[in-house]
Image (cartoon, rainbow, N blue to C red; front, side, top):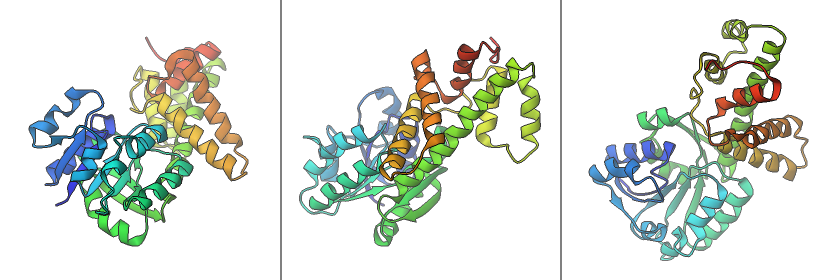
Length: 300
């Protein structure tokens, strides 16, 4: 069993991950940024609280981060009380970033970690907080073979499927591709519902058709629940989705690759956020379409 540190244990995804690490017998320490009530059960089960990320690094073999994005990761690793401040004794600390982060930022942090005797691994997540609590997340890992072999058994404490997707950096890149496809489905579905309603079609008939064919998916079904008044079928904050697609468009831009659909998806999310839905879940894209088009979609 490993000595594990965790940053982000009070988050929607982080709580389930930390809970399962503890349940599988790992010694767990974590920092608390907010939502202390979310970690009371972890403390009750034997986890310990650390004052700073540096304190975690001084006590742990592996530290997981599950935070909002690159700015938070950069602060947790390189800040005055960051992980690297406590990892300078060459103990070979492994820092596993399970956040959705920008590949360029990850590359810079990886170099800084190596200089301090630590290893940064990108291991972002797929699935939802429900699977996090059940220990059934999907994880995509960017790492060399030796590092992957070291951390894979620990990842399986909270993951049903662990994918070694390539060398360092590959995890965050594939995560952005995955989230782009996901949000393209969500934004297209919301728009189709609005266009159909304005054309006099019952969107529920579209759901019946799609549900019986190749276009169907779990994401489509989550969006379809909005037609019954359920705006929480996909528990992923719209502003986080907007951030992820911004990272994706930055990636494409840096490669000089046209990103026509990506920019359209990004701007759809930007618009929904500007209309006041940013702190809601992604299915509120349907509410944004109601405001834009006058369509009546979500029963109230």
